[in-house]
Image 1: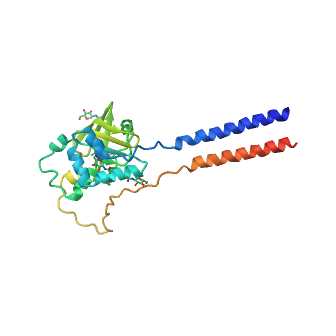
Image 2: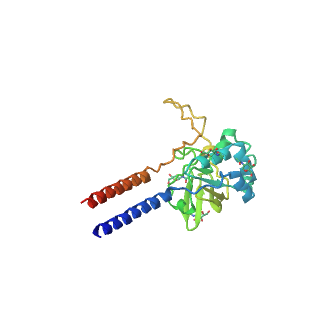
Length: 244
Ligand SMILES: *[C@@H]1O[C@H](CO)[C@@H](O)[C@H](O)[C@H]1NC(C)=O
Ligand SMILES: *[C@@H]1O[C@H](CO)[C@@H](O)[C@H](O)[C@H]1NC(C)=O
Ligand SMILES: *[C@@H]1O[C@H](CO)[C@@H](O)[C@H](O)[C@H]1NC(C)=O
Ligand SMILES: *[C@@H]1O[C@H](CO)[C@@H](O)[C@H](O)[C@H]1NC(C)=O
């Protein structure tokens, strides 16, 4: 009688431990993505982004975005100027750029992490974009928020986020009213071509974003092991209790 009661309560405890183990692991399962994200498709659907679509293609930044979305779990944020924003640039602006500068211009519109609108309130300036160095005045992108408004300044242009075009938990696409012109390309011209610094070679900016390997779920495995350990311990305790 006493033994049966003990045995039953132990069984209940084991069942409980195993069910908590299962529920503790379930949040780690990420929702299955419905096919790879295609940035072109998203912009086509939104309409009025033909220039951006063309530039994403010619610079191959569009492919980079799709690949990154598929391979990283940091997500990505794209600031998307519509066609009329490109049309409002000084005539010849795009044509005056080298291929490399076009790549940088488009990469400047990409932040290599997912930012929800509320996260803009807490980001620290300058924001790092795919174009690279934000700190030495090359490609700074600053965000300020007030109420529902998100303002962006590059040091060359000031604009606001007009609209959310697309968002899941991986990719956010925001319409911006102006093309984000980076200081490095559109800032006040430096006097003469700066003499090459003697110390060391200039850092060649590697465009490939470092694919930081995904954070692993070791911790949940560890708790699983611990629980299994507890279970075996209890089973051993039951056996010794019963044999008393
Ligand atoms: C993305 O979508 C565009 C337009 O719908 C299509 O032309 C392109 O082939 C797609 N790319 C991929 C990798 O599926
Ligand atoms: C997405 O990633 C998976 C595995 O990492 C790979 O097998 C697949 O080819 C990738 N798809 C695209 C469209 O890059
Ligand atoms: C955003 O910019 C507008 C003008 O474009 C200005 O009136 C507003 O105060 C700015 N808001 C913030 C939070 O900087
Ligand atoms: C961006 O913010 C940083 C840090 O607050 C500041 O030092 C820098 O001058 C700002 N740049 C622009 C273009 O607003």
